[in-house]
Image (cartoon, rainbow, N blue to C red; front, side, top):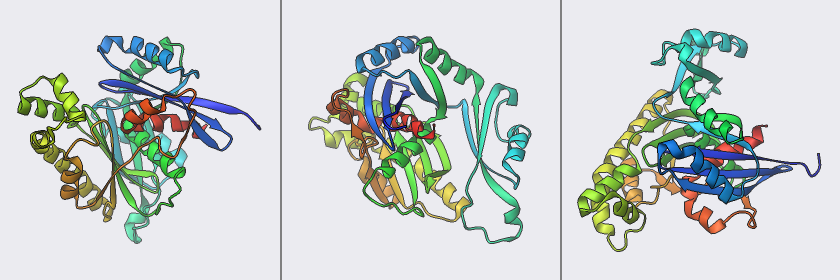
Length: 346
């Protein structure tokens, strides 16, 4: 209907900070109409932190998409005998216990048939299909829903961080003036505070994802040890070196090398599975632009490294959003933007 609009908040409850982005759909395009963030001071205060952040941000809609991550979330890319979608749903519970370390009745299961990659050459391989299997412990979902519903918010989607990352990139390219090569294989690497999300996509479909538990806090601790300071001061120096770039780069290099090796192992696994190289790497997250990262990763991967802003190419309602504050936090907003982009699904 002409003039009708709808909104959705992407609520990213991270380890150290909560981020929220509100997208509003106007006809066939979306606009950022709200943004907020707040540090998590205590795990038992998350509910109050969200409430205060939403109040300050001026976000109005109550509809929320959120996501889960961590060791209670299992993602597998499995081969199954070719079958219809209805048959796949029925077979899922019988197949799942082969791939997940939990009891099937403890988890919420979902799956999706992956598009043919186009490299099979007949024979027995044609009798199989690749399926994305996701299992999340029910208790983790219940915790998220309890917090959201206790605030009077309406949960519409519970996603997984790595897939929200992919959705943010898809939205970014959808509104980009550049025309992307659909055959290009892209690795999205989002470096958070306690973990790094890796999502390898082709034509906006995830063919490999993984969480690596090396990230921003490890860089901070390396800086603190090297400069004999506390973690609070080290965190500030990580974001603003204040003339100590060389010392900081030296202090984090071993951790950068370790993270680069883990990411490279992910590339190797993907490339061995599909006989196709990763073409480009796109970096986001709070530690994305830490000194020395681009040089170390380009050396480790021998590929072009791009830093991207998930809020780029999107209109912003400037009278409701502090654009300068949002842009200062934009590398950290990939998951929140990806969650809010689910408004286009509905």
